[in-house]
Structure formats: structure tokens, C-alpha cells
Amino acid sequence: MKIIHCMNPFPRLVSGALADRLAVMPAVVVTGARQTGKSTLAEQLVQGERMYRTLDDFDVLDAARRDPEVLVGGNEPITLDEVQREPGLLSAVKRAIDRNRRAGRFLLTGSANLLLMRQVSESLAGRASYLTLWPMTRREQLGLGQAGRWEELLDTPDEGWRDLLAGGDEHEEDWRALAHRGGFPTPAIELNSAAERAIWFDGYVRTYLERDLQDLATISSLPDFRRLMQAACLRLGQLLNQTELGRDVALPQPTVHRWLNLLETSYLLVRLPAYAVNRTKRLIKAPKLFWGDTGIALHLGGSEPQGSHLENLVLQDLLAWRDARVARAELGYWRTTIGEEVDFVIEAGNKLLPIEVKATASPRLADCAHLRTFRAEYGNKARAGLLLHTGNSVEWLTPDVLAAPWWRVI
View 1 (cartoon, rainbow, N blue to C red):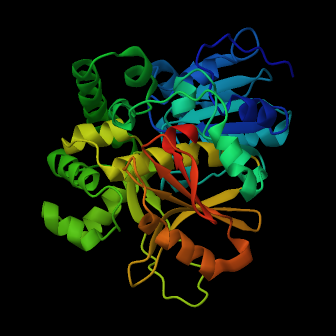
View 2: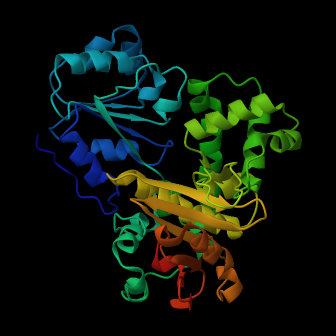
């Protein structure tokens, strides 16, 4: 099947992966938070090649509920946008695929993780490939259509990392400005001032609470839900303790658990799991709490960027990179019960890449301690440690820990 792409000054990282999957699978499902650019990405494939229907159109939504075969029964390729609004539509898609398994027949998009939605009983197993569109990476915002240099780091021997990262004409910027604008295309690219972005973020949160959230579950008290969102934003980068979080906002733990699941299902909340392969040390296994977009987190929390927001920026880039590659990579953090901690661990193939993030322009030898402890714990399985900082120098702080500016990597 021939795919025509529009000229796009801000190409997306997943575009190539999407085209590859459409050439193989009967259905491709692209999910991500609302306003990450899913509809724009889908519309780029429309020009004379596919029909396009969105369930944000009430007539289309009504047809999906009353007679879904009308939408999916034809033979022409079709894009169905915002399918989470009628989860039962997936059963009709399954039946259509079983009648005709032609590659690229269905492109489905949704503003929720369909595999986590209770209402979704049909996963399209064996019939669909899933992609996640995260908010724009920094390099996507620069028009490069890329994530950070994680693939290059994995492919380059450790001793070649310094030359890899020190070369090239990288675009330096203040990480706090990036944290404020986040990665949603409109505030990141189109809006120029903090005041304009504040108006956009406020509208986004209101739309999520008053409409999108109602597609996923019935929330009895939206003010309580918003207070939970704010409390979660203020615990960025911390271990998730649902009991303590509930105590802060005067909500019972089961309610906190259910509402956090809703935030995760709609890609606003990220729970980073612990890397818990136990060798000799006792490890913490609770997840750490992050946000899907730092701009939203700062707007809701009413705070200024801190070190945890720089960590969140790195995580956002890692998630976009991980979910666009074919070979699966796992992400986690590592922490022992005595407080030794590494911010991120990439597990790819049979190797581990430990990463520490420090909001300092002058990293010290002491900042390498936990990276070196991790390497000692996992031996030959561990790559050299990577310490990302806010300065300008690329240097080996120790023979096995390279310090590099964050902007040379993401």
C-alpha cells in the first residue's frame, strides 16, 4: 500500500514506525494523551489514501454505537480517531479484520491506553500493533524528528562515548524553559509567552476533567480529583505511597488507587517501575511517580522547576525513544533500602545502562558514587555510568562514569 506523507516542519519520531507497522499489520493503534498530535499524525496519511472519521464528531460517535459495521465494513483503508469514546467499536474492527486481514486496513487512535481501560474487552491480539505518541521530544521541537541519543550510546563502545557526545553542533538551552513549555505541540511550538501557555494549560486541564475523564469513569467529585492531581505533581520523582498521598488530600487509599490508575490510563501520570533484579542488595520495589508532561505538572503544581523536573524531562525523552523502537527496551530506576539510588536504568538486550541526572553545572566525584555502586553490583552486564548535568563539559569523572550536558543527549 502506498502512503503519502505531508511535508511537516516538525516530523514525529514515530512516523517511520507507524508506516512500517501499517505495511505489515491489519490494524495499528496509536494512543497517547490528548493534544500530543495523534490526529495530525493520522491526517497526514489521509490524502487520497484513507478515509478519516473521528468519534469527536457526534454523528460518527452515534454510528459507532448504533451500527459500527457501517464504519468498519468497507474495504477501503480507514482512520478512526478517538476510539476510546466507544470501546465496543473494537469488536467490530476485530470481525472486519477476520474477514479481510489486508495490511494497513485500520489506523485507530485514542487518548487513553486501551489496554488499561476496563470497558475494553477486545485487545485485537494478533491483529494490531500498538504505538504510543508521547509529547514532543526536545529534538522533535527542533524539527529533527528524533529522540535523544540513546540508540547511539547503546551502539557505541563505552570508551567512544566522550567523542560521540562532545562532537557536533548541539543546541544548548536552559532546561527550565523546556520544562515550562513541556512537549504538547501547541504550547511548545505555537505559543511564545508564559501567560499564553498558562491559558492553554488551564483549558487543557478543564477539558480533561469535564469531558475526557468522563469517557473513562464517573468521578463523583472533580475538585477532589484536581487536588489529587496537584498533590501528585508536587511529589514528582518520589516513591509512590498511596496512603500518604491520600492523607495529604483527605481521600481514602482505594479512591487514590483508582484515580491514579485513571491518570495513568490517560497518559498524564507515569509510574516508573523499580529495576528489581536482586543480586546481593535489598532493593526498594515501589514505583516512582512522574508526570507525562512537565508543562502540565508545573502548571498544576504552581511551582518552579526543580531537579525532579529535569529528571522528568529525561524520562519523557526515554519513553518516546523506547516506544518508537521495534526491539523492546525496559526502563526503571534502582534504589536500595539503605538509600543508594540510580535515577534511570535502560535494559536493552543483555546490557544495563545506568543514568544519573543532576541539576548542577559542576558535577563532583561524589555524584558518581551510586552509579559506581550499581556497576559493581551488576558487573559485566552494566555499561559505563552516564551522569547528565546542566553545564557544558563532557568528561570522564571516573574511568567508568561519563559526565555530559543533558542537552547533548536529549
